[in-house]
Image (cartoon, rainbow over the protein chains, first blue to last red):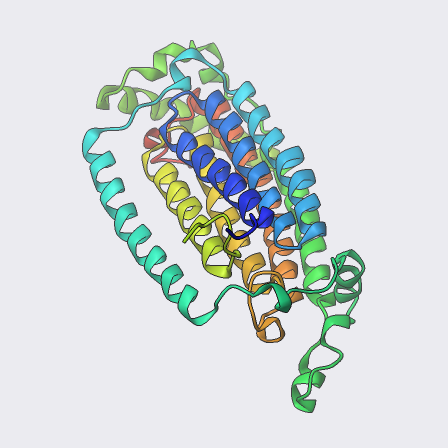
Length: 229
Length: 114
């Protein structure tokens, strides 16, 4: 009887939680329950990151994704929360087509995973790193342009080509600034005067008459939005 | 062969990533709420992150010297940052759409102009 590999036990625990919560996101009709299942799935993925030795990335996942992005989504849910919008069921035909497409993709991806099991085998206990290697300082140095994990690259040409991630970091920071300004600009556009007098329930009756009736009333809104910009 | 006594490899992580990816795609296909579609996108991006981290981890493969090492984690970090930015912009668009049309049903968003 071999001893139990606790790394594997924890992996299966987090993997089951992540997959179960992801399935729950798909199957839940209520948008609020979907948000909760998404929190569980992203938290379990953070656990998987910790198990793979990516300590900084696991913490980042918890801070940015679970603490930031999902909270943003929950705010969106709360700001648009109306009883008829909680559950918007889609047609059976759409479900059938989506499930068939997804099943084919799942088969292909799992086939690739099984093939990877043959070519990239799991490590034996004597091949594991001797101790936990913290990655925070390595990631920080790599973002500044110094790759401490590639110092022993045997190929001289490759060693010169390995630079850090300083330029992507700068691009990402400018990108974040642009996104922030854009999000503020988009979110502060004024409520359309015509739709402000409409009760929200009036838009929910499906049918072509709804679209044709609402289209002309939005024409003045374009001009007001453009003047804001 | 007891799975609880066997070591974990890259392939196990790839399997989890595949399930997350497919769930996210199903979410994008079948949800009519725009925020539900956004949640599906988050799941897909997370599946990509799981794969990147698995390929770079020294704990999951026998020949760790040939892995992409820290590159996987750095790429995953940029994915997280860009996902946060994408969520912010998409949420702003959804709120703007909700202000003008009083619904978040993506089937009714055939005309985003105005």
